[in-house]
Image 1 (cartoon, rainbow, N blue to C red):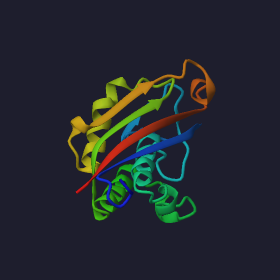
Image 2 (tube, helix red, strand yellow; image 1 turned 60 degrees about the horizontal axis):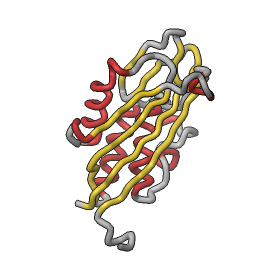
Image 3 (cartoon, rainbow, N blue to C red; image 1 turned 120 degrees about the vertical axis):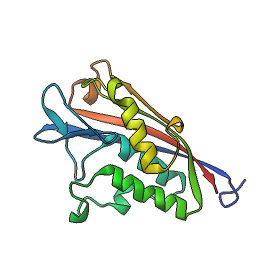
Image 4 (cartoon, rainbow, N blue to C red; image 1 turned 180 degrees about the vertical axis):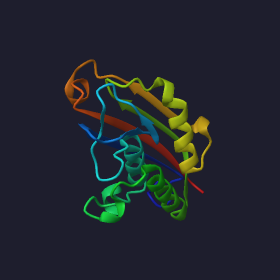
Length: 166
């Protein structure tokens, strides 16, 4: 099927942010405590999970990326709650005539342990996208001390979303 007649679209998103002192560590809308007191650096709250998800949603419809809608040089978005930005992207997707079917994602971080917070992250994302929590997958893994995540220089996330035409 050609693009205009497709009933399903898949989007893929990725994000990474540096771990730095004097910043909050927010992932999936949950404020976490890093054992070294580090947080994620970025123009907004630097929520890598939500940023990867927004890019996946926008990419599924060839609408660009989050930088197009929330540019880092625009002071309006400085320190923004990424869940609020996700709500805006979700509304854009709905206005385009699509709805989220399901989300799958993974966060790559050596520390802190995310498992105790996964359900809250899933619920935050479900609330912001107006879908059932059972349709939101969030997983966490380490990088086995390899790469920037493994050296605790940063945290990254990958997300995949399936959209369906309403």
